[in-house]
Length: 622
Image (cartoon, rainbow, N blue to C red; front, side, top):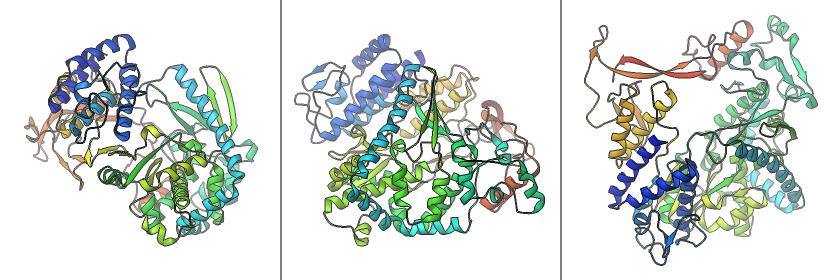
């Protein structure tokens, strides 16, 4: 905890210097609260303060219901008063005509920096999250029942879906019918506990998959009798015998964990195959790529900046987004595309197993939702469903059926990436209504359309100025054996260096790192059009600076290049030997995906996510 307090002090000093404001009283207040509340004051209470600040920015004044738990003087809280008075009028709480953008950044940096720390939740909070997952499933069923009584709304949803996606869906449908895709195993866990290369020897299939994707087409390299003979031990499971997804929690914030549904190997395998077709086809259809994107967040970020500058575009955020997409939503959209529809339905798990360790309960649910996080098709279909509902809202606002010309007129105005939604401000109210009518929860605390603040896909803007902050993910390292903490702190230090407003914090992090590892300067460059993506040339965990790389300590005797002492991250690879039919299948899949053999010559001996990551000292080019 002492290391976090020392870091906090440096951040306060840097932000105070940036805004010419004293932070002495703010530090005293924080230290008193930490003494009584512990780290939860940083990760929860301060984060709530930051969220209330963003809401105040959006509505243009400080509401009396906001900043609960913090004393007030006049119209503003006493805490962070030096910064707040540069943004809001101290007496009325009204937003100033020309608020200080640096102060907006500083308040958000100080209060929200700690909100995403990778910490384990208490058992009580984990239990509550699992109970919320089960409750969410009930609400999806209720929403389906309500929508079933609104045939006009469902007809509108289906018709607009055809208007938006018919060409794209038809192309995917054709590729699946012609079997022009390659299934793929992911690196993560599976419900049946197969890891790494063992997935290529899977011998469990389902009868639902068999109808669309016969196992002999995907579990062996070809239909040659020598390979077909190896499939004698494959088990085909009927729907009632299928293995359910395994619902687990992973660290997200101290307030709540993230819920993941771990898919069975065969399901995950074919989901990745269907996803690969969708990703390949999107660039072919201008209308599709204008509204959704699975691979880049930058279009959403650019529109969020435009919205903050002009006020014409809103940013919407949804709560429990993936868990509230109903299977009925997806079925309606795919109704006229039989092979695509069959493929998606066959690769969708129908049950989920929830083990609540805190109370010792086991629950198996039949799922009404389409899929949870963990399914390869969850992310793309939630974007497609949300975009369709957005246009339902737009059509309702226009009070007439949408045409193709109408759809084109919203290029550059509507965009969906996961649950981050961009929509014109003129259609916000009807869009929010439509989203809620289809059972989704709009997170109004993270949705912005009234003022000049916008956020989308990790970037935040006020009146066109970037006020995105740097977040701490892990504790600072106490020794080099804490490799994850070392790597996280190096990344934090370099991001703060490139922000250019954290001189004391950067120096402090340099001191922290120099005590545990050799920390040389390394060469770097900006590499994208906005100057935001930093490319580092050296594999060393090194520091970025303007003076160039550290001077050579040695020279390579063969290459005659300068070398400096530093550390590199070395993953402990998971042993996973693969031979026979599984090895040939993997090699062929890798070649079909990239048209080249695997660059990893040991991929048949090691596979899957690393067991651990260590750092080792090396002499390498800076």
